[in-house]
Image 1 (tube, rainbow, N blue to C red):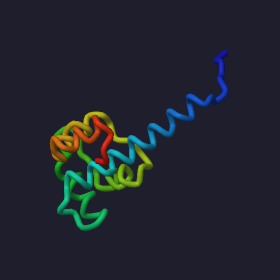
Image 2 (cartoon, rainbow, N blue to C red):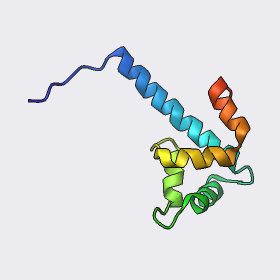
Image 3 (tube, rainbow, N blue to C red):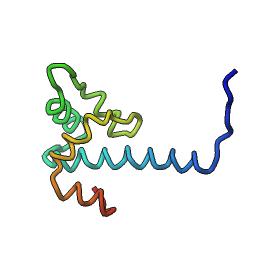
Length: 98
């Protein structure tokens, strides 16, 4: 029989941290593609850049990332960070806004 554990304060902090990570990634997407004029435009640009032969990325997936409904796989963080630039990496390290 599997044990269940009540939510603790620590778990609440983890959930908040996950929400904050999703918001930071969404902000990085906007920073990586400053030419985007709308969410739909940004979703199409991001999907086009992150799609590979093996792993297509659909604009709806990107819209879910932007609305923080879903978290992206780690495989997408590094390419987005590289597109956003070195300053975005330093902002993440030192706590600045992405």
